[in-house]
Image (tube, rainbow, N blue to C red; front, side, top):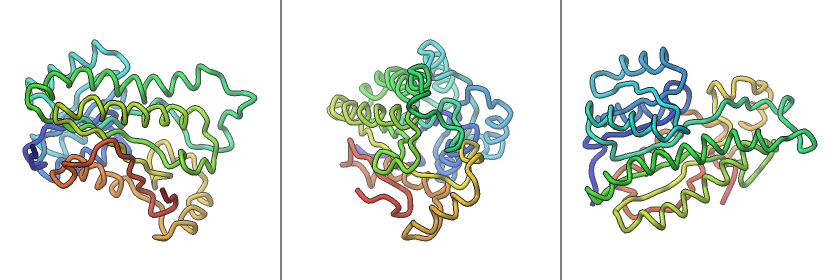
Length: 254
């Protein structure tokens, strides 16, 4: 079963700003109904929804709270219909600042758990909330957001990378279990993005180094990442599931 992007209702978690906002914008430009989830960024989320028009709206929920997610899905359903596509982009508070990161001798389990609670726990709550709808219609798309630090931990952000690694594992096991329901589950992994709130702390010299090492000669943008997310939601990816697509201009291969 395939459906055009313009026929889909899409929930993007953590979409009030940064990469999430770029993903929401890309879906809206292709005619989808877009639910912009936010935790704290109400002003930004509502402003984005107003910019995107009547087929977009902002919905508040902490994705680590199963009850809040269930309530949010009910609100989205009343407004647009139950989401057919989940893009799990929400990120626990994090700054890509190599100088300020926790080294192994300082790292606490609480730091890893905080990242995993949003990356992994948020994916779980959202998938569980949407699974009955996916099963009823025999169709669904789940896209998670990963990182190319799996392949090349050029800066060892231990907590962030470990949480995203666990999310990749869940992406693949969920693909196995949800496949018979007509649901595909895939991950899009970027590297350093130019620019999001999380990467604003990155020194300009680092952006230049990454660009110089990348075959395409520039640092990937949020809009370029969003294009790959659209692919996994589109009919063109109907036979693709359990995959991790790296979108970083060729910085990392494999």
